[in-house]
Structure formats: C-alpha cells, structure tokens
Image (cartoon, rainbow, N blue to C red; front, side, top):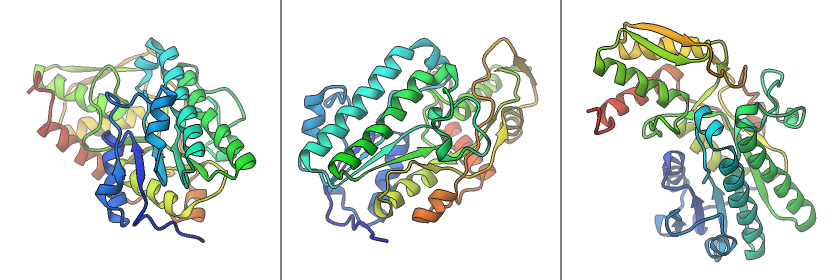
Length: 318
C-alpha cells in the first residue's frame, strides 16, 4: 500500500473551521502536516458556489479535503430543499473540477449517509448506494452529495484524477452545532433536555415515535478515518465510516435523559416525521482498505458531548 506522506503537502480543508473540520486539522497535524501548509477558506471570503472562488482556492494545493456543506436536520431539509441541493452540488462539482484543472494530487470528498436509499438492507453496504431513492425529507441534499461520487469516478476514469469518496455516518461530539434550527439529532436532543431542565418542565416533546435507529460516530474518530483514507486509500469505490452499531431514537432519548438526570415524561410527537427507518453501516471496507476502526465508546462520547454543552450553553439560556 502506497502511503501519501503529508509532511510537505499543501492542504486545503474546506469547512476546516467547522465541527468536523477542526478535528480533521488536528489529525493532519498529528499525521505530520504543518499548520503553515494547511489552508482553511472561510465562507465569508471564499464562496465555493462560485467557480472563480473554487479556482482560487485550489490553486497551488497538493491535497484538498472537502468537508464544507450546507447541512442540517429534518426541519432544515423540509424548509430549504432547493438551497441544500444547489449549494452542495455547486460547491462540490466546481471544486472537483477546479482541483483537476489545478493539478491537485489528491481530492478527498466527504459525502453523507443521506445518500443511501430509504430502504437499504441493514447494515448498509457501499454497493447498495444505487438500489433506490433516498428518504424523501433529505433526498435533495443526499442526491447532490452523491452526484459528487459519480463525478470523481468519471474524472478518475477519463483523467486519472485521484479523488476518493467517504460516507461518514451521523457525527456527534463536543463543539457540535447546537442551533435548534439546523442541528442534528444528538445536539438537538441535548439542548432540548437542557432547556427543559432550565425551565423545570415535567415533560419532553420529541419528534416521531422513537422507532427509527441511527448509528453515530464520534467526531475525533471520523477525523482520524478521513486522514487515514487521505494517506492510504486510492480507489474509486465509496467507503463507509462508522461503528457498525445502531441505537433506536427511543433508546437514545432515554440514554440522554439518564446521563443528564432528566426525570420528566418523554412525549412522542407522532404527527412529526421519523426520517429514514434504520441506519447502520457495514464498516468492513474501511478496515480492509485503510485500517480504520472506530475507538470511542458511545456512552462515553455522549457524556463528553453533554459535559461540553453544559460548559458552553447558548448565552441566552445560561
């Protein structure tokens, strides 16, 4: 296996100032990169929906790790499906093309679990990606991101461009996005319980009926997997990053309430959407091809996330 030495590489990390991006930068530094060779474009100065901005960003880079995304939970997907489709497709498609034109040595595209069909055999295997339509509430986002896999495979086939595509499962951890309008399930629930405790509520309303299952990957594990793939993987096949362990939303809510010592009643809002019925990944390909295995225990990771939020709550709630 050829290992890409990152020590002298100029590396662009889109979304590098974000939740996952900060962890990826830390892992790059641990892998031998130097901070002065890592570029983190800020959206206020570099709008990746613009081809010119993508060309400027890709110029003189050796490696690009594309993490930037317009993303959120079920609520945001229902409210802004057009924006989520357009923004994610334009950012990725133009950056890939700009990277190819600029002679970038390696392009690492981080996709989404939302790309999988709504009804995928569990555990999800990468070869099942095209066996059906994604879950309707997040299909525009999922399809936009999945199109980038096709683009990378086409550019590899025609141009010999080294682009890889990774599919991390739902992420969580300290410093996550806890904004209720755009957060994913774990930070949304942690904040919801925190607010209920602050108000002294005796009940906790939660969307859906609790039956769907989800798999969660701690942010430092995800970042380590991304950097391992950057160094060690050079094939066209998409690769899952996950833990191969699932938990129902019902059990997740109960576990968060237990860890936060919330004693109130959980009220399931069954008129609200559940989202995809089950999510659990087959993670064998990542282990076989670049040696990635998740390490952080879920209960401990959840406790770390809760502890961080209690120390950094929304100023309006503190």
